[in-house]
Image 1 (spheres, helix red, strand yellow):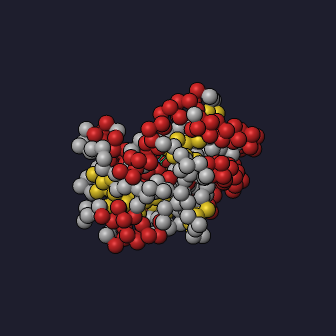
Image 2 (tube, rainbow, N blue to C red):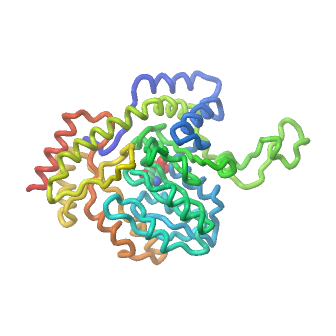
Image 3 (cartoon, rainbow, N blue to C red):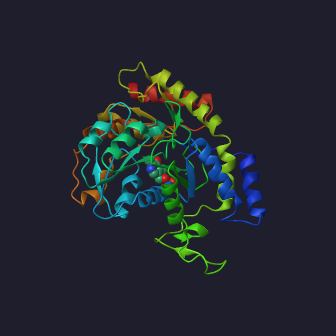
Length: 375
Ligand SMILES: *Cc1c(COP(=O)(O)O)cnc(C)c1O
């Protein structure tokens, strides 16, 4: 089965991990700092905090943003459930705003209509790798005393209007799961241009421990001394995985280029087909495409999906609207709330997209999609 996404690992990655295993530090060592510096460089110079997954990054970002019981978080339903689940775990009530029909990204107008004085954060997702307008969302959030969080699990390496993802939003989260734009196996990061938010994120993922002598309440206690000021958790990414991430991040540009080439081949093949809708994009964007979300006629999506799977193409659907999950249904959320997201979901099929795909494989996908859609 040709999967919809997979990692690109080469000998230099394997060597990097082997070296980390032979070093003095398996975790809390120098590779963590190096990987965080490298993430910072691709995120417009924002401070970076490595964590154990994209889900951990979201949880850490919500805690750093001060989200707690009684707060509301406005977000998109067209995402992986973690975008909302982690805010709910932090105590927030989740408010779903609809997406733009062409891109699947959170609509800023829909979000604006749902802001209240309890809104603590707006969280948008760079769906498929296409960046949202972080500047506009950040302005909107700040006008209402809230913060803007960008779930950039799909879009590490993407750029909008010359700004790399991670430069503008109050907090941006990345995922380094194997299907994403670069991988550490499991892993993620929180980045922020605001040093105080980055420090809160760093403290939370490191069991709440404060070591900076300027920040200690009792600095005279002794050289061993560290203090907890706010409760934390252990979301530390070990050196072994940071070494892999550092090796991978050096290839991000090359990965991005290949993902764009494949996207272009799909677009050229499908743009003129009346039954198909290709992913929307804006001129200002330079996306590192994580997904190729093709839209097919909704009433035939299931048969097209099944037939492609039976022919050996590991297509996927991204995503079931988050509030359709029984956990939200049981809280009283009802279908029909965000019609654009539901329409997008009913038509969507993610085609194989990863740097290791050959042109031959891409053409096989194209031929089979066109054949199945026409039959
Ligand atoms: C993958 C993903 C996550 C979660 O990342 P993990 O590393 O799998 O925990 C969160 N949000 C979105 C949009 C994702 O695609």
